[in-house]
Image 1 (cartoon, chains in turn orange, blue):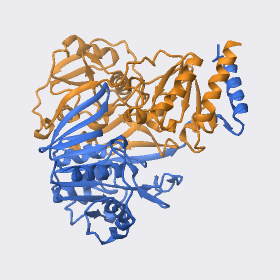
Image 2 (image 1 turned 120 degrees about the vertical axis):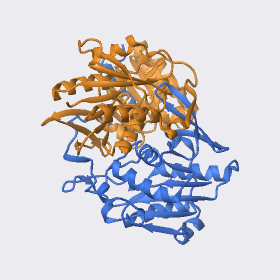
Image 3 (image 1 turned 90 degrees about the horizontal axis):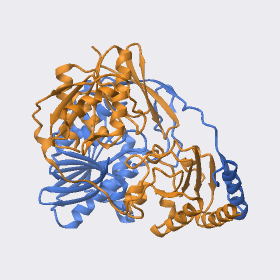
Amino acid sequence: MSGILTYVLHYQGEFNKNSLGAVTEAGKLAKELGGEAAAVVVGEGDDLTDDLCASLGKYGATKVYRARGPEGLAQPVVDVMAKVIEENGYDYALFGGGLLGFEIGAGLTARLNAGVTMEVTEVKVQDGKLVADRPILQDSAIAEVDYVGTPGIIIGRLNAFEMAESGDGAASVEDVEVELSDWSTKARMIERGEQRGADVNIEDADILVAGGRGLGKAEGFQLCEDLADALGGAVAATRAVVDAGWYPYAAQIGQTGKTVAPKLYLAAGISGAIQHKVGMQSSENIVAINKDPNAPIFEFSDLGIVGDLNKILPKLTEAVKAKKGG
Amino acid sequence: MKICVLVKEVPDAAVEKRMDPSTKRLDRSGEKNLNPFDTHAIEAAMQIKEGGKADIEEVVAVTMGPESAVRALHKAVSLGADRSVHLTDDALAVSDVCATGYALAQVLKQEQPDLVLLGQQSDDGECYTIGAVVADHLQMPSLTQVIKMDAEGGKLRCERQAEYGYDTVEVELPAVISVGDAINEPRYPSLKAIMGAKKKPLDTKSTGDAEIDTSRVGSEGKRTAVLAINPPPEKEAGQIIEDEDTGETVEKIVAWLDERKLLA
């Protein structure tokens, strides 16, 4: 049997959207391969109920392995998945985009001496095997990669796998006892999911003005806020400026932040690293202002302006106000 | 306490990267530099050393790569590492992530560090993964993408952005930690440090020296196979405006937005 095992992350009784995307993808691929998709969940609270676990069946998992262990850390999950793979012979492990998926997938690679591909955007079935599409060199080329031996580890890019209900019934739930490795218990979560800065809502906005390091300093965000006010939109930010404390975490777009697809995404002083791109590339219209003509963002913007945002943004705000007022 | 920093030589960001169509590997000729994320790892090591909360005997830079990779080590030493180890062997060429992590772990086993630091990603390929691969081989706890780290009393207190916000995690040493670029501002090497870099001890190791099973590395040990390199899906190139007269530029932007009914 050619099975695919996924890991499903949960937090406060809810499954992660990217994990559900991975289950959906695994379900689809397993059917094509003539095998089954299964999922691993790991938690220490009582929120992983039978019903919640069985609900993964809706996305295409036929079986769910539930183990007790600390939440939000990768290495305990590596212990669980390695045991489940060794005892049940899954041919592939597949992860949705997200920090833990990278860590768990990498740990399994070492534990099982297995091939791994990262940032995968698409998986196909070829000659009864899985082949992963992996963008390389800042997305300027795509490598088609398959695996030598089993299992093969596939770590998806954020939002690469869309979650969808497949119309299948409930999954069976099996509790597995796993003795955690000594080193897996040496990292301890002190605080999880801390929100820093004000709570802002960017996901419902039709128009987003996003600021990056190119704003120069925290005060530079005033330019974005003025323009967003004029356009009737909200302000978003890159990871770099959020980590620097210039703007609240709740406004962060990208790999570890939010994914948005507004009607207009105006990027000011954002270079367009892949970690940012994955969170906003589905926007209907992308406008970028950057002083560096070689910034990667110009490769996926619909309108690119090479210039100084300190000069352009204030004038643009005035012009938008005038146009809308008139 | 001893810190090993894993470093890597990557093509300079300013140089266009390309694949070699015959080998389907990254063309590694041309200008190279120390992976920018690794400079943050070295800086993190130096800040622990200079912070005074932990007694650091030495900081050792470790790399795997061809002869030219020694330049990454010189750079690492000029940024403060006390000595360096260069794992180099023809048998290691074209190693994939699985093999690279194993080989580096073999070198680290001989060094017996209390802390292994590395950059969370490299511009040329392996993103986020090598740290966790190495950690599992070394049977050490591990955390990647760390943006704040304090060492005290045999433990590290680390912060990072995870799926649901900022996580704070306490990790017992020895441990493997990969760091993000928000963790610090790397220092510039002094001229004296640059000049002196080549005089610091450099240990060159072969696969035999590091007790690496060569059937697990290089082309023999490959667990993945690149079938083809394809161009990305065609995307219509966007319009580009060079801002010369800002008034005119702004008019063009407004017209563009208006055409798409974004100013309603």
